[in-house]
Length: 239
Length: 262
Image (cartoon, rainbow over all chains, first blue to last red; front, side):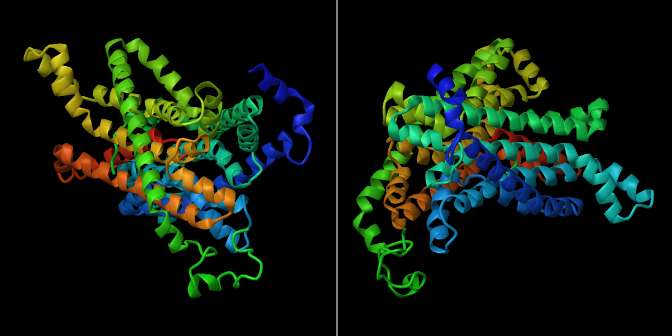
């Protein structure tokens, strides 16, 4: 343990082409890109399907897709990526992580919209709002807590799983772990593991803060918040 | 690189015209290695079954403890949560100096990943049993143990099955990574292919582990339906409440499923 701390705290391990500084930056960069693309790809269709109160089949399909083992997907994309000249490392990892990141965001966005009390949406329509306004200024804000929860779950998963990229040659924080495994360097393994765990925790904290400051109303109005968060603990499966 | 054999056919055309070592899948290799593939399958399933079996037994004991003494649930879930949050690659790697390379290391790591999901689903499932049902059982003179076994557990079956489903699918994905510490399974094929830059074993190993995960996922959906026929008939009755209810379940399932496939 103390050797792992020595490894983490010595300046030399942070410098250079495969130093921790660069690995950390690569790790964060890939995770951020994946989450960004996942949000851009899933939130609009999920919002729209939720608004139309449709898409049950899509949710079921997406739920099944989370059975995909990420490492197997990375491995499967790897030869394809090589053959078509996308190189090793980055793209296989990116594709597999994107598949990992999509389901929580999609399902939570869709559920967030469809679980809004219909009387609220009807009231908005009765006030003369157009469909677009209903979606934009009623359904989206009401669904925001669940959407952000989905993004948070995805982001934490992605940050933890980017580690696997090291197995196909992506220089991320998994690299000290795989190198340590090969050279029997336990300090390096543990150091890498600690950094990944800290980064996951930081991601979780970042999104909790984001949720608190972007939605002041959900902190104040207790009943709404309770209604939104309580079902999360009931571990039943709809699919 | 896989397709960079000097003097070889142009990449891309190989796939269509001839099947050889440069193809994504070289069928002749697959034919020659059916024994290896079968062995990997057996190892993969053995390891999955071991982890799920041990995990379920431990989680059941922990659940009974935390249902009996309510205060213990928080700390137990927190410990299981910490175990769950360790990156899989790191956990395998960290265990190697302690337990050595091989089956045991992988089994311990994988079992520890199932605990959080199973513990949470069993406890929350039993707690979600309506109070009126529990009171009725008590009123009929059921002793606590008999009530637990014949009333609480059967009513918690949907939650428990969904926990088993998530845990199994997660473990099938993680076994693939366990090959790095010599636990066997489909990951061995992938590892072999990656180290030789030879795509056939990679594609075979990856496809089979994806197919296995999907197959088990669907099996558990079917099993849940068979074991809990009463949840199906509920669907058509109360249309107005259904979406919300269903939604809550989905969010919950998805939350419990955090970290699948790491």
